[in-house]
Image (cartoon, rainbow, N blue to C red; front, side, top):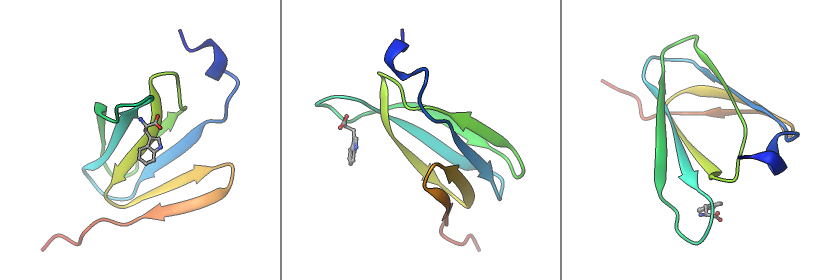
Length: 79
Ligand code: TRP
């Protein structure tokens, strides 16, 4: 199904708070949300881009480890 993508890098997403949301966006002319994953603090998701997913949106405080280094996402502070 995702033959061409199996050798690609993985991305590690570590939630730094409860309720971090990872949204998969579809590959191709249309850009739609097709999958949502919720992580609680300390949980890790290991992901790859595939023929179905060409972009991801990460909402909340998370550490994103990828081939270019480590990026922190920051959510809007909740009161
Ligand atoms: N459907 C778009 C595509 O495959 C998804 C996408 C990739 C995208 N990169 C993006 C949407 C950057 C907005 C911005 O190209």
